[in-house]
Image (tube, rainbow, N blue to C red; front, side):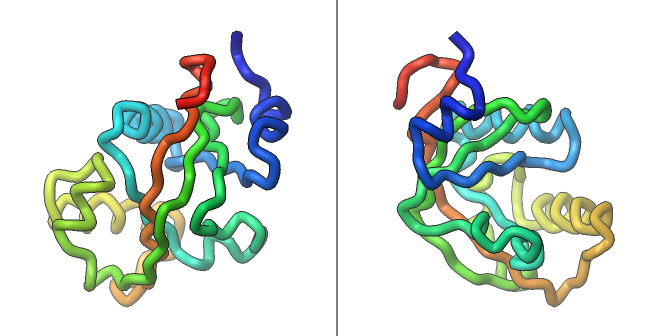
Length: 143
């Protein structure tokens, strides 16, 4: 049985929704890495939450990751938040993000992502979030 977004939000009251990636392909890759337990961290800029301040991650809150079609894929719990600049990023934080080989690969990937958004700046600041998957909606039962 596929869970609707409304059902997922009822299961996790107070959850916010987010759609990882800026393309269908990247969204699928990220969700697959999260599902496999290889991606347990992510970065976003504070500006990404300006239009919807309630969506800013909160430690302990469970949120809903959406697939590219807007359907619920996973529920994730924020474990920790850290503010870090682009230049402060290091290999220990990159490994938990799952999709990058090393610091150079991360800088290339994130630089390209934010250039596509029109907001890349080498002095930019990120919210580095560690999370855990608590429910894989494809599996039918909470983790």
